[in-house]
Amino acid sequence: MNKVMCSKAERIPQQLQADERVFSYFKGANRGGVGAIANRWHGSLKRAGFRPSPAVWDFVQFCLAVCSADLASPRSTSADGWTRTIQLTVGLCEPLRWVPLKHRLEEMLKILTGDYWTLIFNDAGVEPPQGDGAHLQNDCVSLLSGGLDSLIGGINLVAEERRPLFVSQLAHKDSERQRRYAELLAGAGSHYQWSHGISFKGARESSTRARSLAFYAFAVLASTKINLPRPQIYIPENGVICINPPLVPGRVSSLSTRTTHPLFIGMLQSVLEELGISVELVLPYRFQTKGEMMRSCLDQERLKELASDSTSCGRFRTYNRQHCGRCVPCLIRRAAFLAWGPGSDATNYRFPSVVGSDKSGGPDDPMAVALAVLDAKQRGLDRFLGGALAFASIEERPDYRRVLQQGLAELEAVLVQDQLL
Image 1 (cartoon, one colour):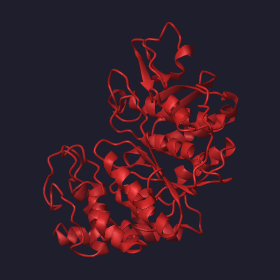
Image 2: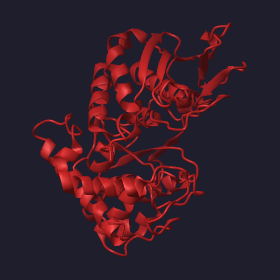
Image 3: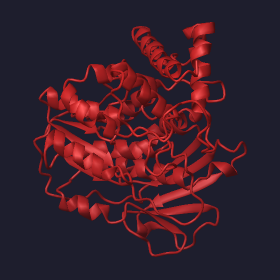
Image 4: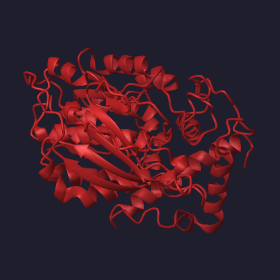
């Protein structure tokens, strides 16, 4: 079992357990074996005027604690080389508010990361920053990653005369792109760009299935700057990636990410409501493919200007910040551009053709996509999907089914173009 504790520095025990990872919130503990989370961030938030409620601040601390446990628990040491058992002690300001949610949160984290979680809550959290509490003029929050979907989401909000407050997670080489997009779309002063700042010594897990929780924590925190009773938080992601059905039988459970899955987002919304945090999580494109998002974008000129500059690649770091062209996100990106208009994609791909090997040591994604397309054709879409849509209501299931069918059709066009099918 992986044991992790997250606490304010003053409450960390003098004698650390040998089998437990310990993290200090918002400042270094100056002790060997103790990692840090978002060092000095608390002070910068106060200076920026943030004055979140204890409930919001505890949600931030909880999400950052989960991210810390995720990073500090290598999957390679687990029994099957993937699924972990994690016991996480979370320091909070108001732990009693969280105790009734314990089992629901453990189930939510299992869906997100594919692991078995045991949560323990205590009162070792850091008090919220006490800034002046001044509000901004924005009327919603929108996640901005530097990717194509979040770019389209931002473009559309501005075209609809909304005033989005963009929130980003700092990402090496993407950070400048995030700032540029935010300023182009919303002007200065409508962008927060934060990092979880988790640092520690020792083995580090690279799959980061829980990283999205930091993104949601930042968005909920940013929403406290909006003077509305229930601010909307837009999560711009196409429906194919939202559902992310396993392409082949081996890619089940957490091997296919659940970052924006409607089931997970619904559970997260329910948790926020139980905590008394009044925000609305919105998945505006869950019934559209990436290609449909591009075709229906409300400012086609702005999209033409920026689309090829956006990032999508799952192996961006592997190829020195260049799109590989062969991972699943790249294939969906290429399919979207082809659906938008042949010749519209000016992305510089490391591998211009999907045929061949990228020698990255990663999975052969073009072959997995080809097998998925053929399987859906031969056995029918419903047998291919299996229970992938079991989460959906009877009313919404046809819409999810349609978007996945269209997504496979877009992917098939790329494979046919490169003569893999």
